[in-house]
Each structure stands twice: as structure tokens, then as C-alpha cells.
Image (cartoon, rainbow, N blue to C red; front, side, top):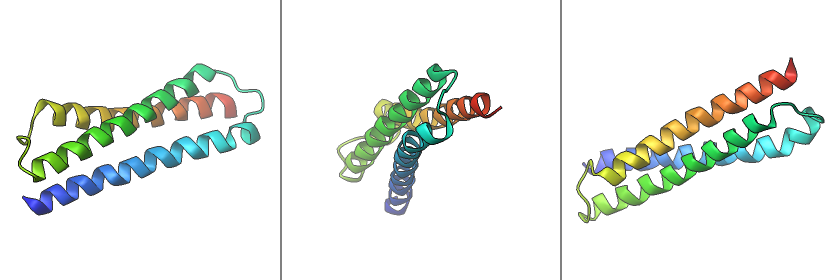
Length: 106
């Protein structure tokens, strides 16, 4: 059980790194590649979803710590919401960012 918890924790740690990197790189290159962007709402949606994914990762990581300390039952509602928020937020954030880039590059 301990090895599975470590793998889960590492998954969320790496997803947190990806979320942060995508947010920072998107903000850094926005002015250089898109001087007059269209569909700015898509970029705002991407940022909101990536921030939601970060929040979901933090919830999941905290729940893993509580499960490891036997303070929380595995497969609790909090854990399920954290997993759902982390994975769907990342997927939808990347999709929104791809839509924004596709519209502005074409």
C-alpha cells in the first residue's frame, strides 16, 4: 500500500509541475507570439482550468498524506473530487490552450 501511495503522490507532484510550467510559459510567450490575440476568452478558460487542476492536485496530495497516516479512508469523496478536478482541469486547460493557439496561429 505504501508504494501505491508514493506513486499516486508522485503523479500529482508531476501534474502540479506541468500545470505550473504551462501557466508560466503561456504567460511568458503570449506577447511575443500573439500581439493582437483573438478568442481571449479561450485563454482565460485555459488559465482557470489549469488553476483548478493545481487545486485538485493539492487536495489529492493532502488526502494521500491523510490516508498514509490512517486519518482518512481510501476512496473517500474528497479523494474522488481531487482526482476528478486535477485530471479534468489539466485536460480541459490544455485543450482550451490548444484552441486559443490554433485560432491565433491560423
